[in-house]
Length: 415
Ligand code: GLU
Image 1: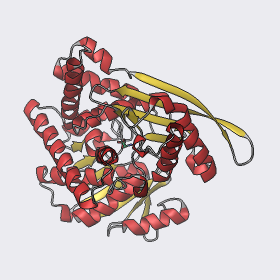
Image 2: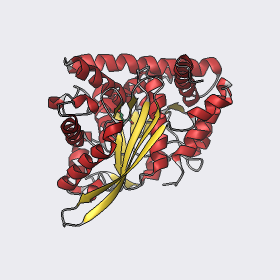
Image 3: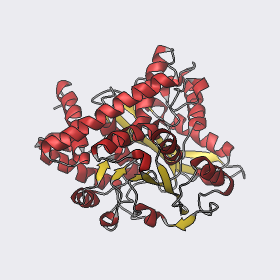
């Protein structure tokens, strides 16, 4: 993977947006930095009796539009600049979907694949202890991200509840349903993305029943995208991958069977009957729809001109660098930018917050309808803005999101 600083990518994207909107340089300066960030050292007793100190972060980027919102990532390559970038994208994401929320992100530098459940639980609880003064159901509400899941959210909600002396599950979203989690949250990121793909297919004249799909990444977003592409949209999944490599099958892959294989062997590779390919090859396949659904910086100026997909649906955060954006645009690739395409997760998290405050829960059908409405509306707003100002889809998403944040800042008298 190309080592690029994602926060520099954010700055470049923001500069472009500032140019289009002719933003006041003072406002541009405020938008380019997080409002607050917390660094915590977390000493954890490991199973072998030793103590290991983990670094954790919470970056609160901007709360002009409401309480801070954003997930917590557990990853060995986590850096403060990655968390800053992800927190900025959360700010634009919540704004674009018109959620009454600001943006934040958390991160812990660790490798969950090499930790026991007990070690992970102690780390999750220690993280909440570390950031306790900065979070709260109407202040800053974390959620899952890469390598964190509902089980971890349950430990975190429990730890926070112990601190405040009452069951206050609304401090976190993405919880298991029996602890105040929302119906439909587990596949909401992928499902939301598919609603935007469905709308994009109309725009690009693609018949989804005959469309082929490649998915980079087979975690929560990637797996559910594969499953829903097949069951909801009727597409053929010809390739998927994970950090160890990829697989290709002209006849199409069965998403559940691939997941079982990954659960058993630790990877999608060596799936019976499929051809082994690299992650790089997967991105350049001749398919109708490509989902980058893993990490940042995978579509760069080196490979962008080789991308043959008609639609690039960015389920990952930050998969495309600005130089690659220009190339994709020139080649007529329809990009559904990350903070639009993957906004289904936080949108359902927002529904979860509303239900937690209400103490009343909607069923899955209700969640799917509300999610579809918000995602489709956001997609068409971005598409219309892109056509109106003759700018690409990412720039259009930025224009809408940043304008709303700036309006809130002005109304609050910050600028
Ligand atoms: N981690 C997800 C994201 O990047 C979800 C955040 C949330 O639900 O708050 O959008």
